[in-house]
Length: 193
Image 1 (cartoon, rainbow, N blue to C red):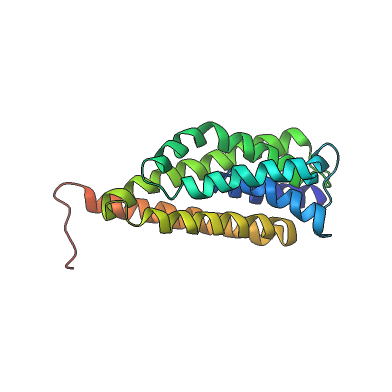
Image 2 (cartoon, one colour):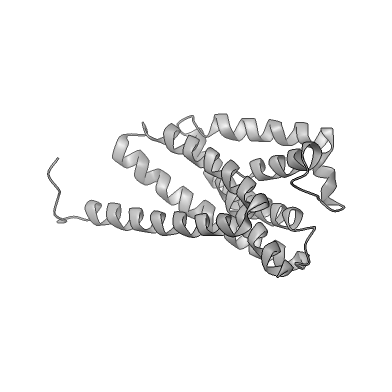
């Protein structure tokens, strides 16, 4: 049962990293340092050290602000193709370090989940840009940041709920992309405004 719980934590924080790569690492370190919710095992307990918290806070701030700026957000998404799976693997190993889940399983699951989440996120953004001229992108970015934070905390407190949220978000994203793609197809019937 502890392995399954560790896997759920890993999936939850990895999905969060797919939305905002440094945020889950920052929150894991902060929760370890200032609460009893997380007990990061060595070497992951280094995330709770002040120098790592400051560095992760700076990276998170850059991501949060940059993702609200047109053109910068798209550049960040390209960088995220490499950053998200790396952050997802690290967050998954750190978050599940107090469980019996093998670190290699956490790393692989984390990288796959974070990359899948990031690719979905990056796929939704051009649709938002085309549909709203980019006006909805900052709002969408705020939703992604808040979801990343909520997923991280849920993964630590109620891992099964975090996984359920990941599944629901995945289903919603697929449905949205299919609906929009169908409307953008030439000759597709248009709904009245």
